View 1 (cartoon, rainbow, N blue to C red):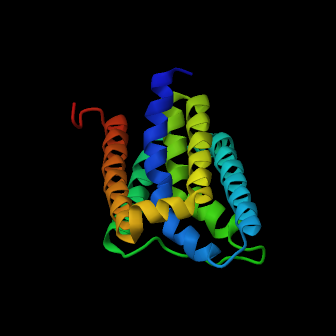
View 2: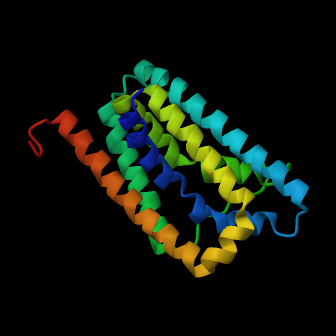
Length: 198
C-alpha cells in the first residue's frame, strides 16, 4: 500500500463520513447524557461503523463476483446513489435522522447509517477496486477514528465553529461528494463504453 493510494482513498471517504456535518446530530442524540455514557456511545458507534464497513469491503466484492456485477456497474449505481444523497443534504436543513434503537444511538443511527452509511460503503468498494483493499480499509479506519475524535471533543468544536459554521462545512462537504459522485458515474460509463470522454 503506497502513501498516494492511502490519500486517494482517505479524501473521498472523509468527505462521505463528514464528521463535522454529523456533529449536530451527535449532539442532539446525546444531549443531557453523562460524560461516561457519551464515551460509551462513541466507542459503540465507531466500533460498529468499522466492523460494518470492513465486512462490506471484503464480503461485498465476493458477493458482486457471485452476482456477476462488475466494478463499472457498481460505480454507476453507486455514483447515482451518492449524488442523490449529496443533493438531499444540500437541499435539506440537516442530516436525516433515524430511530435510536433499544440500546441508545451508538449502534443505530450513529454507527450505521451516520458514520458507515450508503455513501461510505459505496465509496470504499469503488476505491478498493481502484487502489486496493488495504488502502481503502486503512483510510476507512482512520476516518472512523477521526469521527470518534470529533464526537469526543464535540463541545470544543461547537464552541469554535458555532451552529452556522458546522452547517456551512456540511454543505461544502455535500457539494464535494456530489462532484465525486459525478466522477464515479463518468468513469463507470467510460469503463463500459471506453469511447465516452476518450
